[in-house]
Image 1 (tube, rainbow, N blue to C red):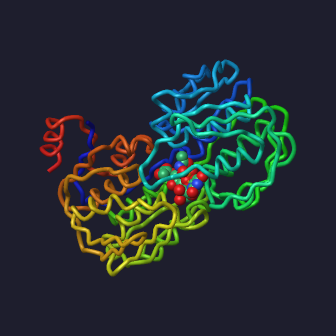
Image 2 (tube, rainbow, N blue to C red):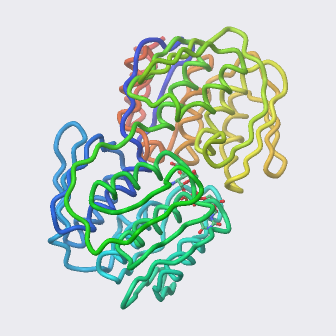
Image 3 (cartoon, rainbow, N blue to C red):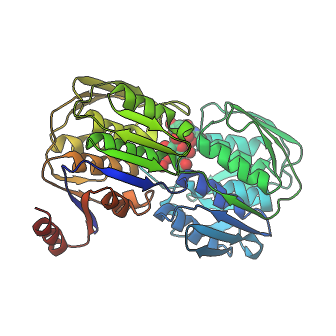
Length: 430
Ligand code: EPZ
């Protein structure tokens, strides 16, 4: 099993280029199968979750061509079946977007229930509520979501909880329903806007994405398009945290600074200097960081997907920080790992209380999920001595060339596949 090994202590410095947004790409690539014309998507991050989704699309007959540089061409005209029950789909969360896409296009979908990070119970009742509202009969049977309709008809849907997944899935299915669909209490995340823009470039008529009311005027069919995915807000934020934790000076390029505001302002609050440019954010770390309070919230609030990485930084910030996780009920599994490195963190329900320490020490730790794994890497790069992060497959589900990008910033880090390579790294990097 692969591991990351690193020796902490180097302040990261230089420039890093952020890839396209994974969570936008999942919705966009699923949406691309909704036409029988070819669709070309650029800036696709080549990470494991995306590979799984593309394999799932291939498995139902879709034609997928990956070109160098993150360009993916999808031809949905060759799709032969609407049942998606392959090994790939079970491994990722975003596979549920194929329900919305297949339902919208063929009025029928049978898709395995989603996998993904184990960060809470993650129900899909709001997706189902939306599909039913526009006329689909939806059942859960044998671990699959079965959705069928003879006709999809627009409806007024109020989401009981702000859900990125439900908002995107309903947009997909409703884009080709008859008449108007209104989604109230919709998620406002940048990736929701990106999926709406992409569907509009295919001929859909979606207005209001980015606000909490989305209006969709159904169209009879979608056509081919070329579309470029927005930069990944969470990948960018992760490098910003790595710069802060290592007291470095990193310019994160190919970003939309507006999408990073909640992250930038928290880093400013704890003492980092942030310099924004049109498409870049520079983070200048400081020797003394101060504590702060964080509460995760739907966009534009502080993202739950940045909570573990921020906690790794706060573990080294002077004073007591209070982190409240309000989106997922089980997103503190990494805390035990951070504590193994000398952090002083106590979890009480949805709250983590972090008493900053002056240094962390390297240890063997687990990547308990995708963002938790990123947090372990950040902690390891800031810690004294060697850190080995296990189960890095979680990290590789969402970060493209993570190790190479960190090496480019001066980190002593390597991906190793066996004990011999691990020892070699330790002999080389003393
Ligand atoms: C998306 O998950 C992302 N995943 C997650 O990113 C991200 O953490 C999350 O949005 C919040 O921003 C993908 O885009 C593939 P939600 P999703 O529906 O859509 C509850 C990462 O690290 N809920 O917005 O599953 C749910 O339990 C991953 O990249 C219902 O109750 O999240 C949660 O408490 C992890 N019923 C809240 O809503 C539903 O039908 C928000 O979940 C749907 C959700």
